[in-house]
Image (cartoon, rainbow, N blue to C red; front, side):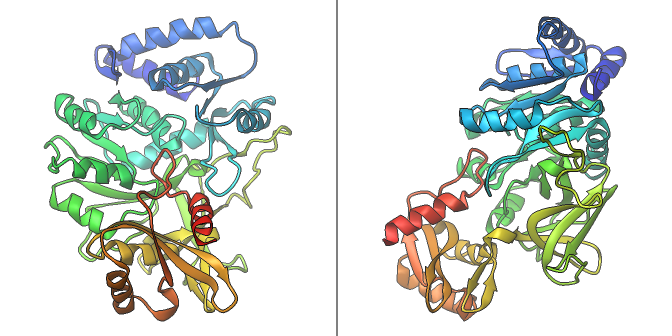
Length: 441
C-alpha cells in the first residue's frame, strides 16, 4: 500500500461517510472510494510490471486508477492524452525499468522548453510536499478542493494527495468550463480551488466576479499573474494566493496569500517549510542579485527517470537548479522573473519578457500581450510584441516610451486574435516565436 491509499484507508476507518470524491456522475464517500479502488486494484493485479501508466481523457478514470495503483503498491504514471505516441514511448522507456521501492508517482514535465521528462517522486517527497502545503494553506476535514487542472499535471495530482491526507473532498472537473465552475462553487460549498491565470481571467470575464463566502483559497500558479488581474480578483473578493512550483518539487515551492499593497508580479513570498531556496549566478554561487533559482529539500524529486534507473539524475548535491530566474530579498522572500531561456538581449541589455509584458498589459485597450524577438544586426534581439488589443500602434508606442527604458521597448507590434497557449493556459513561447517569424518574413 502506497501513501495515497494509506491516507484514504485512515480516513475511511475514522470517518467512512465523509465525502472523498465528487465527479460529474457520482459522489463517493471515503469508504466507497476505498471499495472502488480495491475492486479496480483486483482487476489490475493481473497486469504485469511495477508501474501502472495510463493515458486517458477521463479524469475520474485517472483518479480512480491512481487510488488503485496506490492500493497495489505500484507506481502510477498519468500521461497527457494529447501526447504523441513518440513522446509517450520516450517517457515510458525512461520510466519502464525496475522501479525503486520508494518511487510512487511519475509526472511528466510540461515540455514547454523542450522534450518532456519523467519526474520520479517517492513517498517521502510526496508526504513532505503535502505537509509543507498545508502549513501555508490550511486544509481540513469537511473542506472541498475543486480540481479543474488535469491530473497528469502535478498541480492537479497534488490535490488528490492533499485532500486524502486532510480528509477533505476533491471536486473533479473534466477540463475547465467557467460557468460550470461558478455553479459548483455554490453547489458544493468549495473552499479551495487551483487555477492558472488564464482560468482566473475567464472566471472574472463571466461577469459573476464575487466568489461564494465559503472560498478560503484561490491558488494561482502555472504562469505569471499580472497586477491588473490580481487587483481585479482581489477587488471582487477572491482570496488570491500567488504560487510558484513545479513537477520537480512535488508542486509548491513558495506561496504568498493576502497579497500586500504594492505587490509586484512574480512575488511569491517565502519558501514553504522544509525547502531551501537560493538564487545563483553563472558561477553557481549564491548571489544577492538576479540569478537561477535552485531548490533543495525533502519534497524535491528523487530525480528524472531513465532506463538505467539512475537516482539523483537532474540534481546536483541535492539541489534542483530550475530554468527560472529570480531574486531573494533581505527578508527571504522570492520573486520569480521568468525563464532563463526566455531572456532576450536587446542592444546589450538583458530584457526579461515578463517585465515588458506586464507593462503592456496595463495599457488601456490591451487584453493580452507577449514579448518575443527576431534576430537583428543592430539590436541583437529586436523586440517584437504580440498583442491582443484594440489600441493602435501609436497608443502602444507612446505608452512604451513613457513606461519602459529604451532597450526594453518593442520595435514592432503584431496583432493576434489570441496568443498561443498550451492546455494549462501557459504561453507557448516557441510557438509564438515561430508565428511571429512567419508573419515578418
